[in-house]
Length: 481
Image (cartoon, rainbow, N blue to C red; front, side, top):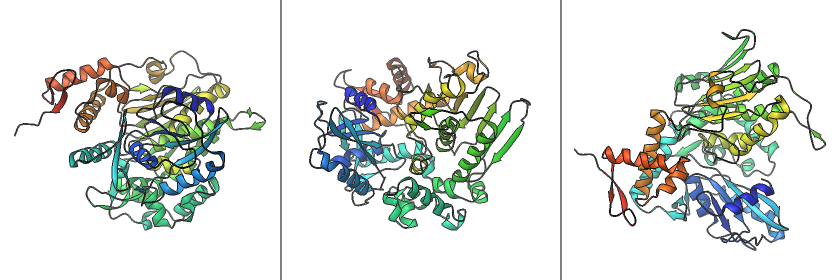
């Protein structure tokens, strides 16, 4: 997190994914209520040392280190946050003041703070008090996040021998002061969301995310038979392939195999960042490979693929799209598909925050290949295109022809539209007075798109308006028996 990004957050002001808090000498008493609300909604950024009116007050310099340690420890404490979710806090020097930035990712689980469930709106944090509100939050999470599926009969004997110890060792090397370093394996699985109790059903056990991260190949195949990743080289033989690796192992080992495959077939390039040499190939393709592994919709049988052509690398991934768009740095909010898997990769140092990783690929692509025509396109199939040397601005594939543009089409697929309808209906259940503007911002589509969706839902008899346009509210129409 740099000062430019902090400036951008402050200028934008508080909202659905940004919260300012005064914190000169003490941590705010409601800090973890906001953290809980962000985890339950869309994630966000908390800035300590900034007042609600954007005044930069700062944090006492002699308090910053202790604050960061307390935030990490408290977020890892089930008495404060349940399930626990490690929150990273960083000290930022801004306008001669010390600020603390806390990045809170969206979570695939429902979290409680001090035994209360909080959600987020543009007006701030609010407690969910009714059974219906809480039920809808659980439904929203279960619809969006298949990684939370519990396998009651899955146990540690089904994991590759030594893989958990290796993962934890890498985390410890990456972060020697990590709170997970002192926990036993069961506590590690629990606090990282890989072993969970469904507070709605009472079911308990290891999750799909644990199976995918650590499982033996035969165990993964028995539970998720369609799981595989195809790594192909199509430079000379474009109809079939010059080289191929069919990967069916767990994600920790799959990452290593894919990094090695890319290193085998793509050149590196001498590049100095300041006075330090960095590997452009590793910097770019670490993010590309991590995105393929982290953000796939694993309940979908569509296979993942990484294909190296003469002038580009294309990846395709099954996706559960909330909206159709091209990801442009600075113009999108990250929406991780598997937050628990993402958290493990991030703590291992194998990926950045989603938004930061995408920016790095755009940033270094020009230096690596001479072209910055990078594509991250979110649809029912997530497509990535990274140029290689010799890449042309002219369309080189069906995907380049369709996606190399900053103008995103609104001709969405039926599945995407249905996902949007489901989202709108769920928001109405949570807040019958939800506004068009709110839905437009949440779904990152034009207001006219929301108007059309609302009209369609009204025509289908799924919702109706009670009262006037101003002051009225939406009502879900219950299906007739």
